Image (tube, rainbow, N blue to C red; front, side, top):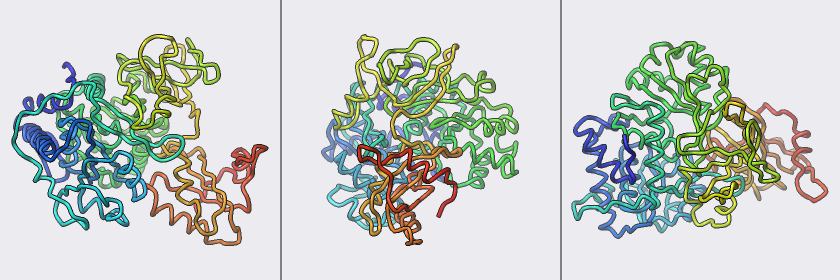
Length: 521
């Protein structure tokens, strides 16, 4: 099936193909494909009537709902950029995102705002539309009131920006990555093709739409015209109920999800009946632990397991053929069709041939347009092809090993970026959350090897070591100011942090001082 070149065409084609058949379900809400397409178009026309113009941004700060999907696709269909905001972000991160993207408006709900400490401060000065029952604590217009008839929508150009996906870098606050219509549609078609998605499939989407692969699931289901159920994952019991109620044929996850499922299978909370409908599962956001994959294959032997690799700057990059998974469970495979994966020596910039270890560089299809309003950072990561040819490539920052058969294996990061529960985490953002608090002097944050969740974040501060409550106060502060995946697993107070000859914190000496911490205060 040929890929659409813009998201409006993708929505229209899916609506025509699906008709009145159920397509998207969230909780008790179910919407047919044709009705979904109509809502997207009517909302897009309403945005234009309200003054929304090509290139404008629509921030979507919502709980899981059909309205979330409608808002994201309507913004792109109207020629603007959809800005999905993760449900895990707190006041400080959302305030930063809104200041950074300067949205035309924000779509939100009473349910989502209940998770914020001071929603009026976070949303001050923004045009607001509300979704769902109950009034917001701030003035807003019902989102449904936007829908209207009007002149036919113009198809957005394939190279027009369609989405602004925020992710952490190795330093500082989150930054937006600009993806265009063509890349989002091509990524949907490419993933659907190698997964073998068919119209009779039913995808269970637990990854948020603010995550590049979560958004890809929504778009791949549109491309094929298969059913999709979006849900929040709350625990093994809820997951067991979802499996039996939805009977999904496909499920995507990150290593922490598969670890929980493997534990549930080992302990009897999940059984053969829960995975009977599944045809395939996919893993992204880190390596699936061999011990967890062994449990999956033992209890659900019929599964096709796809190990995958992607970076938001290039959407999707590689996958491992399920036929090779048992023999090479630590590999994420080979490049997608239309993509080239290069290995570059971090010191010399030389492109390495054959079996080698170097920084992974994504070339060819699916390269994003760059970082939103950050030309210097864009220039550092989005560079000319190191082989001298035309086109832009993305330097991933990941050290990767390639074997003699062309399979790739993740080795580590070439920068300070951490990976927790599939999320990229900046150590500086965690450090900033506690800097300047009473009793806190110098701050350092780093990661230790962890379990299926990824890195264990260590927060070390210079302070009064006799203040036995300080670590607990810091941890409580982090839990109220940071998303759960950014909260330190270990907090340590030292009389002073060690420094090297340049006056910087000596991380190697600090790691040696703290040791292999496994306890939480």
